[in-house]
Length: 315
Image (cartoon, rainbow, N blue to C red):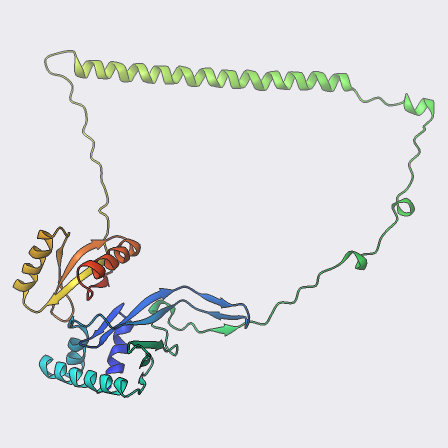
């Protein structure tokens, strides 16, 4: 069984694909990158990682293989367990387990599984069709002061005589007194218009306030049948929570409800997320509106409650 092919198919759609009894392959979104040394541009992608502590069977991988191959769930689960046993045996014998388009798994000196991801496929569907490219370096010419020709101002600019004849100086005089008078008149006009506009606004505001006060007095104090004020209905948009910290997926719905009650008794905002595409009832510790809140809660739950908890993103 080429288990790596089925894992690769699921990595396009899910952020966590667990291999029962072995570990989980995780994806995390990474923005576009520029390599300043090689001038290479890389599109947004998903970064692969491996967590050997997530061992519980969430049913995702086995159910997917069963649907594709048309075989029974228990039969597929048995084949997956046999494949996992082969991987563990290869790792213990210091053999590298290579998963096509996913990466290489090996044991380090401490006996822990280390993972080297493959970069042959981009699992981010929104970047489908985008590939990396290398752009030629842009050459910039810096012009120094030595390259600029200096022009003598004294040689190029004409000299204007500063001394004129007496009759030419008296021939034209700019009417400064008329310009000053025009400026004063204009300033006064502008100030008067602004003052008028301000008085008009104050008058309108005063009339509006008097109308409101009169209406309130009539509605509150006069008559045996007070005027009923119009009601106001506010439409508040419900916060969408698409990020769920999953506690488990159950084939029997009754077990899922028991898990919800247990988590709620422990102080979690647990809820039943409904069936997934594989017919399993998913239960969440809590749901959040942002990835940051969900990631913070997931890290805390893994540390204090259940290392096998994982993050589910819904549309």
